[in-house]
Image (tube, rainbow over all chains, first blue to last red):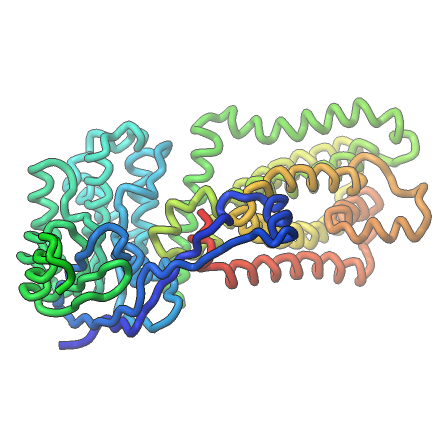
Length: 249
Length: 255
């Protein structure tokens, strides 16, 4: 099997401190008074793993473990502070699907804008637009402003557009559970289809059942550090034991 | 490379469409208004100042309009462009897209406004009895410089605005000051030669001056004048591009 993603001793840091939302005046004053504090916070600390074609990697860990940050670095939105990420193939990242839409634009306009953001071509969008409407069941609303849709409908549209991707590496941030019961089933089926088409998939989920059922490898992060990486059952068992209050074994 | 260009071209088009729809909120009046407002501005300035300066300046209305035209494009493009990164934070923190596209698309609507006002300007020029000659084609040069200059300054300002949220007020004041220093409605003839040269340190004045030389005086500026005009644009654009390169992955922490 071909390796599609190599993550080698990757650390990712955030800047935290008093810099946010202070103006130029305040910034100058604090520099003069030597009262300006910025710290870097290691959200991901020395993570190493490899992904092969057809692999399905699940990432588990408590809130603040650095899962989303890691996904952001994998998708290229963030840059690691140290370490190397090598991607052999196209990457599609579906992070926080509902965000990034524009409430004032219509459903149709938003669909095209989102498609463009995900790197689809114009022809592709024109050809698949009706398919998107069918899948998301939003055809009757296509000329409505996006803000008039319910949250569930919004994520349905997001999912419908995003699920058209055929990348070599697919990155998902808890997007498997979208919409109401019926749609959830449909979206899960679609997701499996994409995964089966050969993409290596990485996904974050808080549902251990889902991870156990779908993934063949699991990465467990805790406060940025890599606790375990390997076979699904083994890692999940350890993680479950940890959740049950037995500590990191 | 071609694939990449094609991909981002589609995104660019969609962003332009979005900015346009949002700006004019699907009303025809919205668009008319953005052209009307500089014209009303012009009218008021003309009413107030033509008595003061009109006697000493040939074609004072055109003189004023040329200043107003260039200045309002500059002010519009930079003040709107400044917001382009912060306003699109929801996108670039989730999807890996070139961040300058937001500024470029924002600038398109300012540019279209400028183009429409420019047409009205030529209408005024014809009405004022100034002959159209081939020299008017030279205006393409300052327009190109102005576009690059505004884009560059937009890059710098939008990056700074991510880090310093009071930039909006500071830049508002700066624009106001620059307006007074750009000789939009007065002439600099009564200043000493040294002071007159110092006016050329202001790029906006330089571009306005170019317009007036061509349209009113019918003379083509010197080579040095061209070089200076281009240098301003390229330097500012270079600084802006450098900031975007350097802080490309830093913006994320501040939004």
